[in-house]
Image 1 (cartoon, rainbow, N blue to C red):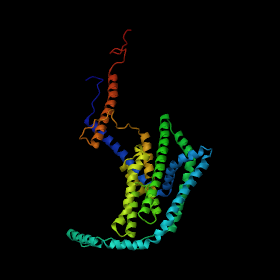
Image 2: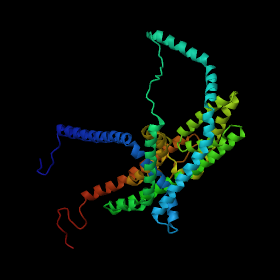
Image 3: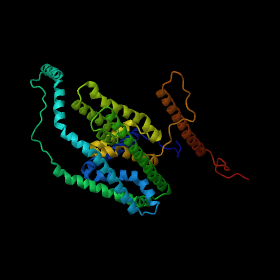
Length: 419
């Protein structure tokens, strides 16, 4: 055997290296999992501080262009940030005014509505008894002597509003202070983060992340705010047209709940259904407010929102649902408000941190008569993957061929030929 020949690795060496590779990958996955658990624990523990600060950053990104326009008139950043905070306080005060007067009327009518709901639920006594009989039969079949029972303990701990007031006030103050300082110092924050980037390429990507995050979040929130205001006006007019009491309250509630996709619409439907059950008698009158709201929401979701926001900012509905459920679990109502903006921020960061080419072929697949939309999408994706694999294969083969060929102007022995 030649001296320069390399020794083949034994099966034991190959198995050991493969085992070490598996252990290394498992260790990385374990570290990521432990880090995710630590993040969940930190979000839960730091909710009192992190939730209002995150909401302030999201609102600050929304009002950033407004502060920029104010500063173009020579207003210093500290004053423009104060104007933004006062503007937001005015909007919140106007919303509370819209809610306060009609809500107090409904609170006064709450006992009457509750009695009527009890009467409506009494009509369901027959089906409930049938379910109870089926439960007893199922228990006897399974050999259980005791039936399932739901008990409500009256001696539970009740936290009074007086005890919650300081915590709520502290979160409000943290939110307003964070919003002011973020809007006033957003340019300094950007410069400080860019100064930490060691390479030019990293600075370029970070600058684009700041630009995209501010543009996307601001455009999304401003557009959604305008759309939600239109939805609130439409709901108020619809409730007034069908004779629903306090139409302004339902319009304002629809506008606020529309900030939380899926969950907000579901809550609004349940509220209108409960109000209909407590105030109306006929089935048509009970379902009419719900039908009007569902129709308005359908037009908003399928026509108005895609027209104003555009298809480029459309996110995967499954990712939106996961983001909403996660943030609602972590921070409650505040989490529902920041769910979609934080998803936009995460997608913008990933788009620049891990840039990728879209799965679009050079020429789309010709669609046949029997081909569905799903089959066309999968065929185009498969063609794009094949084209990308061929593009990556050509440079590798070229480099491999150059490695085995002698350099130009040299003989096989490595001695220069005579010129």
